[in-house]
Image (cartoon, rainbow, N blue to C red):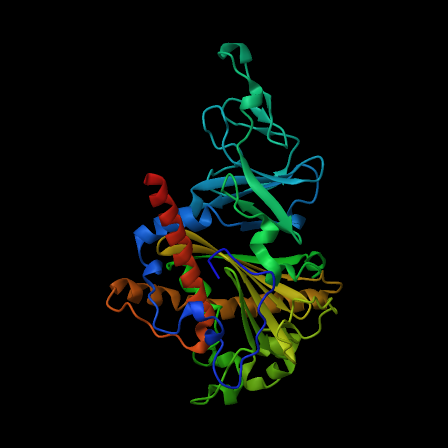
Length: 428
């Protein structure tokens, strides 16, 4: 299987009585791995071109663009770009580079040009010289057109960015001619969630953190639960914290550049007071969400390993998106690189809208406790990045529970190597 290639069927393998998850995917190997891709400025510059300017990137949900003329801007430092995402009069969601075609002024911004913004408008007007653009990007108005030399307005519309929607998630692609459409890129493991009702979960709690680590270093923290007994000892049962206790995931799966990890779980695990915050007992909500949630449609792709009792499935869409689906709600992560050793971490929880004050409190408590959990992971990032950058060790052993860590770094390197070979072939 290549970095981009995939068969027609997704491989679904239970872990055998002998052998391992990693051995199901021999292309990954089982030897030590290098994390040089997380510390090299040169690799980062190639990764910007090979990955983030070629892959489909999630930038929004359709609920963020509820009516004609609804727009938002997205600052994507890794692509050195700002993008306008807008719903046109036909209900289609489009994306454009946030640049006026006259003198290159940033077109849509409020008080500070590097801050993201959103709103509703009939057209976009440049603050500098008043050029106006329609919701489909066409140039509608030029101040004093007679002052220009043979200006053809049809040639100066906004520069488009490829844009498509899957199950309410808005994606863009900076490649002028994407090699795969969005659905092909996502593949069968992800599109098995076609019928999952994300649109019902519209009550959101967002947070953003700026981290001193490579984006993959943080993504690695959510790809394995081998670290849980050590790092999250307050949130797990006593028996799991014992020396040599086993804490394993129920199912790992890989499809092309994307990954999946699914775990067993039940809220009953959190009823013991010794590993629960008092507010969790009082509100009956916490780490795995509210203890009572609406019955949500069980999509075919939600629990591909057939785990019982099923708890969480984390769908990791290459390069920088994770969607963690729980019972009746979901959690979304995005990792946006800002340099070779820094990134912006965006996250939100999405619930069915609260019908009572108590339900709203349950949602808020779950969001706070989950944020605390994520901050425990984030607290490791600076130390990991600093030690990797000492560049003393270049071979790190990974166990079977870290198969997805192995896969992410291999895919990133593969995409960069593909890009490098293509450009060398062009030079020849």
